[in-house]
Every structure is written in structure tokens, then in C-alpha cells.
Length: 198
Image: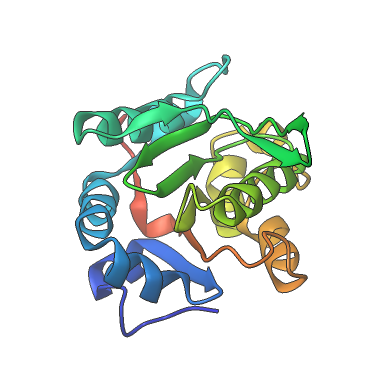
């Protein structure tokens, strides 16, 4: 599921990059400007010890920093109003808000949610793709290997095995979740970690 030819080497060193349904080819060829902006955000990202140790809230500081960088580049949170007409009957088909959206590219940042959030995101990508609202869905998450760092910092219990990490997402992608929507996933590796409290 990885694609080493399209993803630059410096990104591969800090993120595990996987795809479903030719996501990298679609993203880089159909939406090259957005692809370059995603790379800008990933290159600037550091997984800071201080952010890991900060008390949790509605949204983690890690997800907030990633979202904020996208917003600085002109991306925005997006809510879609969708419906389906059958004869003369209109059926509302509500979708979930997308964290960051620009030019038919949808990005979700899932740092430490319960893993059913994956089902929500993938279902949302599938529906939005079928309705031609997006060309590709992108998920930024943490690699399972980061658990070693969390354990060392005494935060292991805050990041349980049933939360959003790469090991919980891959079986869903392999099983066809997300339908026909091209999907790209970047998992944050240990190489992105910076101990800013030394």
C-alpha cells in the first residue's frame, strides 16, 4: 500500500505513507498544488514532547497545530449540505465536517480519538467522493510505534490500543472501507519526535 516513487524520501523518513485506490497518483497528478501544500505541512511538523504531555481537551494540541498550518495556507474546515432526489422526494444525506478542505481534497487529522472515528471518516470520504465533492481523502495519524515514546513519558495509558493509530486503520483500508474513494494516509513516525524539554 505504500508508494515510494511519488512520496519524497524526507517525508518517508518521518511518516509512514500508505494509500488505497491509487491515492498518491490521484492527489499528486489531479491536485498538484494541494499535494505540495500537504508536503509543506508535513515537512514543518514536529511531534513535540510538550504537546504529548499537555492535558487533553476537546482537541489535542498536535491536531490543532496541524490544522492551523493548513488554515494558514488557505484550507478551511468544511461542512457539506447534501441530499438525494428520488422522483419528487428529497432525502437529506448529512455528512460530517472535514477538518481541512481545499479544491476537492479533504484532510482529517486523527490524533487520539476512539477508532470508530475511522469508520466515520472513511464513510464520509466515500459519500463525498460518490457525490463528486472530493477527489481524494487524506488522513494524518500516529504510527503504532509511538507507543514506546508515550510509555517512556508515562502517558501510555492515555494512548490505548483501541484509539486512532495506523495499526487500527490498515485493516479497514484492506477491507475496502472508503469505497472507491482514493485515500492517502500519513502515519507520524518516531523520527518526527522532538524532546523540547531537555
